[in-house]
Image (cartoon, rainbow over all chains, first blue to last red; front, side, top):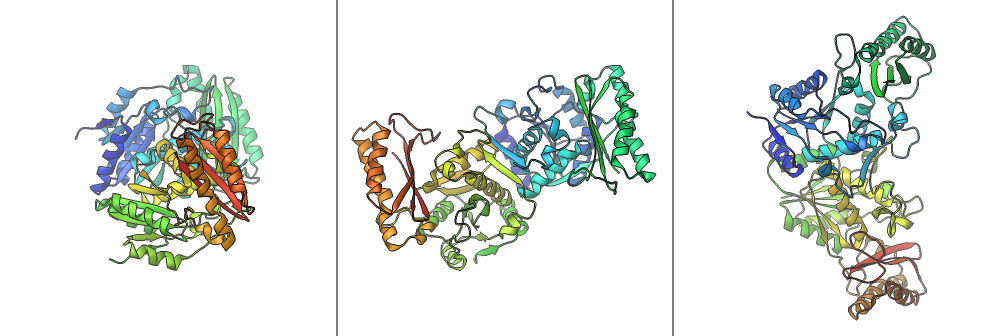
Length: 286
Length: 286
């Protein structure tokens, strides 16, 4: 079977509807392209839980801040398609920004709308205001177009998958959200399309993020109860790398993303840091 | 065939999915119950454009302001079901407020989010802040549960149907929105579940709304170009009824709801007025 590449929204909707009408269970993997092994692991998970797999490739303008990397975000469509074909993906949805967000577009889906301490206002929500509103809005659109039975998101974007699950629950989407474990390079760096921005020395320093999470894990397994202490040690460890600027390190409840005062497992440790202009994130549930 | 009455959200979703899988075109009429002939005309229109008709009966708490009539809104479920059964409706969806909006619910769908002059901020949006966000959110939920092919809304709530169409377009819902003409009593009063609040003298005075629209229509057909003049004459006409307090009378573009400076057909003339505590609306496209 050849892999369909569909750019037209209406056609994608009709194709997905025809699959549903034929009784197929649709698995969906939304991506921004620039695919790496991490994405492929999501596709494989989707294949496991469904009969037809649709992957979207769309660099979503409304989830980028005005000073962020929307324009220079890597776009490698041809290579992405090669990779997906190898995985026997059934269809790639590749809409244009102008079709997705035409002149006059103005409807947004917002989790924890108006709550100053909502899920979308913590962690990455602080340094990226509006980011999660952009994510939930585009994902709602994609769900409406494809109407999938399951959809796979990566655990690397922990806050994102949590917010998507909340949206699905609150708005009664039928789709089941599956969270795939973070896929890492051999040296532990979480795979990310943004890793391609790194110089070789930055690439080397970036491993400090994962190593600091392992450090935290060891501390917690050795019964350290103080988030403050853990954060302080992680910070020192990371800042030993002169090229890294920490955005945040947080120890939070993995369901509410509220800071915890004392470690009581499970906790989520989440980091965001800048290497030059490149912002990387990583996290671990311990 | 007997009419199904389904309260459980999951069951409703499964029932609707099974219809879709069998190839039926689903027509959907969302209501808040307290059904009258106006609603029945929507049901008949839905029947005309689809093969299976689902009617929801749900008094949506999140579209009422804190001082509005959520609690006293008429609830006549048994009678509603009798009426719908006569129309050979296939299923009634009758969820509980607690299932639709459980503790912790926090995701909203908003048309023209953040725009101070958005569609949702004009006309009724001025005196009912948050109303349309409540409407779009519940309708998005209902669409996700039922996934209809067509849905019917009444022209009496002109702004509502316009906002729903915008939401459908922006969020890529596959559903086609059909707007049914306003159904009127013999004396011209637009049918509304809220008419039941009126005392007999209020009920009599309420006809002034429709009559003022007819007055405006005559003026426009006689080539009156000034919205100001039309509004002023409508106002005088309505306020001759001592029991009516005008909320707004507006002459606007029927697509943007922007005030027009000079009449250029088509225009929408929209009124909202209080009779005691009862707020009634009416409108006409001329």
